[in-house]
Amino acid sequence: MWKMAAEGGGKESNEIKTQFSTREGVYKLLPNSEYSRPNRVPFNSQGSSPVKVSFVNVNDQSGNGERICFSVGRELYFYIYKGVRKAADLSKPVDKRIYKGILPTCHDSNVLTATAESVSLLVGFSAGQVQLIDPIKKETSKLFNEDRVIDKSPVTCLKWVPGSEHLFLVAHSSGCLYLYNVEHTCGTTPPHYQLLKQGESYAVHTNKSKSARNPFLRWTVGEGAVNEFAFSPDGKFLACAGQDGFLRVFCFDSAELQGSMKSYFGGLLCVCWSPDGRYVVTGGEDDLVTVWSFSDSRVIARGRGHKSWVSVVAFDHCITSVQDCEAPAEFSASDEDFQDQVQFNGSRERANSAQSRLSNRNSTDGRGVSVTYRFGSVGQDTQLCLWDLTEDILFPLSRTRTHTNAMSAETSSNGNNSTNSPLPRSNSLPHSSGSSPNSQKPASSIVDSVSKFATLALHEARKEPPQEKEHKRNHSMSYISNKSSDKLNQIIGARAAKSHAAKTLGTSSCPRMEEIPLLEPLVCKKIAHERLTVLIFLEDCLVTACQEGFVCTWARPGKVVSKDVLTLRPSEMWMSLFLHQIWRNLALHHLLTNGSEWVPSE
Image (tube, rainbow, N blue to C red; front, side, top):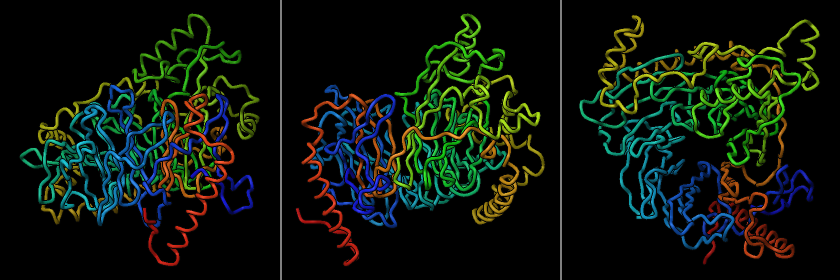
């Protein structure tokens, strides 16, 4: 992974970077901290699921508690992650599994129950099953959706529910999400559902089984696959990125839609929350990163830097900061206009208390705040981009006219004062203009009231209009009728989604390119030969992975512990690059001539 491309004659655009500079210093690739399959042969990724990486800290008293799990093709590895401290030892995996007939597509560890003796690791598969394993004990606890009667489509994303030791959420390419409890089993026959809640382009159903049985809930969201979902830092909200191009944010406890956003075009592939829960960033098939304000339910910026689909977005919690500074001289709005813009403490504290502290500070000492959010993105163009989201984007009222784009200046000359007024809120938000969605009182908790689903569903069904009752009857018929009803609903939903997408262009949910600020990447570097599938920010490094199966560690400025251990001299570096390129060419030649992957003898 840390080699120079042979093609292009060593031109700048084709060079694989091993370091890059930002305002805080130089990030350096650590070749000896690279994780991959033990033979280090580039993986033949054709027709395979994306390489995935997840971390968990087992709170080891030795101070080396970080564990890394990564899947490459049919293989799943679990290692002690040494990061910037020591070189990786690929000969001693904690656990290694090779699956037959199915591919692991995603995985997640439970941070609440993880110890040095046991880790609860969920693994989703291309055939729809979900496996619960313990890689430390090398045990397989349970297999969910074993007979594929719940959903036959691939698992696209799964995560433990924040704050829970037993509940986890699974998304499929069918567009459905399912809530499971590890303490309960799945049935051998297809589950029957009844409608619990329905809204624009989504519906939530409960399992009609008389006994406790998985799954407890089924969410049907949008049209097409739910490619990724992410819980907010406080665990109360759920953001879903769909193949239909929509970002939808729900209150997880009440299953209420809080807001939505539409991509410029194409599907959304990834989503993440800012560390304070104020902003959501998405990436997808429009080659853009999009920043969406949760409190205002509107797109506030787009970023253009990638040349192909954006596969992963992630916030860097170590760089995100809020600092005191002199209030801008040009700012003349009231405290009401200025509040609801930023979370002050950069943690999981609720937004409304942070807004109050920010408002009080502005009104007492006349000082403002300097805000910087750092997030990154990787894509199928093999490039890593870093972005800074600063106060001139977050606080458009405080920007001078010289910082506005050409289109804004032109509209201002025509008598339009849109530059000095915030964009309107989305109609999908159920709160008023003077409140924040974070300040709402959640409805009865779905997670904490699983046993009351049937009663709650029947009670809400009586309040629904006649057409909703008809929908409920369709879902309470036999399994065959249930499938026919789902098909009909999908067709109707598809037509409605296409019509809705055409209407959203030019609104706060999907503004035109000239209507909002366009971010330029702080860093945009080619760091791989194959498409990038992983970007994770840790305290002393950032981790990337590509479809060849190489997981790379990039040390933050000043975080390299020992140059003798983790770096190579120039002569050693070039020799390693040369040997690595030969190794890769031999593997590629064997694949093209024999049609199979080359596995050299030990």
